[in-house]
View: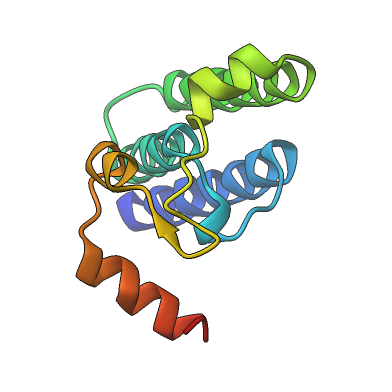
Length: 127
């Protein structure tokens, strides 16, 4: 009986995760903001806890996942409408190289060193 409950809760949590992923939007890993990454990990952790907690009510984790999903959807909507909120949640773009000139001050604030930057340039076929 315990194994059947774990299987059913796991399937149920996967269905909820799938629905929340569709609601929040499909993004590639390289396009995830830090906020999206943190929320995704948190929702996955709640789903895993829901699957394995046998003594607790399963509706509490479902409500928590829905709250995280709805807040993420709401913030995504607001960042589409407001440039200031978008900059707050995703950060401001930093120019590292422009017409052959390196902006070393931006390297420090972006926490990237020159060798790592040059490696990324070579990977992207920019010489």
